[in-house]
Amino acid sequence: MVLSNDSVNLEYRHLVVRCGPVSASAVPGQFFQLLCPHTDGDRPFLRRPMSLYGVNPARREVEFLYKVAGAGTRGLATLRAGDTIDIMGPLGTGFTLDPKLRHIVAIGRGAGLATLAPLAQAAKANGTKVTAIFSARRPELMVSVDLFKGHGAEVIAVTDSESTSGPSNIERLLRGLIAGGRCEAFYTCGSSRLLRVQQRLAREFNIPGQVAMEQQMACGIGLCFCCVRDFNVGGEIVHRRVCWDGPVFDMMEALP
Image 1 (cartoon, rainbow, N blue to C red):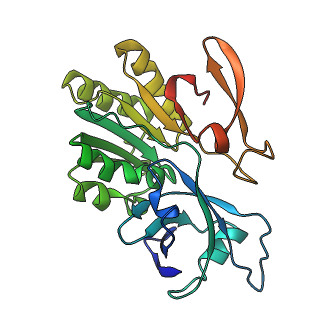
Image 2 (tube, helix red, strand yellow):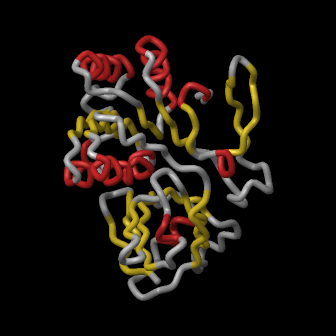
Image 3 (cartoon, rainbow, N blue to C red):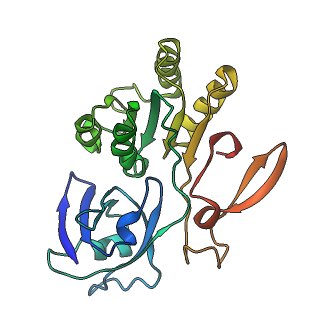
């Protein structure tokens, strides 16, 4: 059942759904397949994959942050509190957060900010400090900032409009965090350009990392092979299904 479906800014909406205990067991990085409502103008056929934005097992609630961009999400935007929605999940392999880590860096852009959001709560529970570098076109389109800060994370916001979101500036920020002992692992989603920066620094400083890959999906359970991407594993190119083998992968194996 839909508990709320509110606008966050000009582009994103926040959907909160009451669900069963299995769905409420989702972990950061996993996703759900949502059956989007039909409208007078749109009749989406396939379910839409949606990253987990938040979860509360005690209240049996899951949360999604989505951008209204097509037929499916336009249907989602029509939902009101008390409506019902068919969700399938949790699906896929999520992030692994080693409790021995003292400080991690989360880097996201666009929809990737939603995917990374559950890490803030999980890291706090582990006693792991987080520095989050969030990228967006303009400041008013930034999401998840308050959520991360609420869990004690430091947030560095960079934007295209302020000319601070380029790879060179991100590399400068990351080198500063590494030098200060505040980057023991990378967690990222949402930008191939920023992924390449992290991979380069990971090789230089021997820092592990994980990336949540974004890809068009159909079934969400590995049957249709719609979401296959190439990965470099030990110098060999292998094919993996993002929905089934991921969506979270070793950052060094991902091909941007």
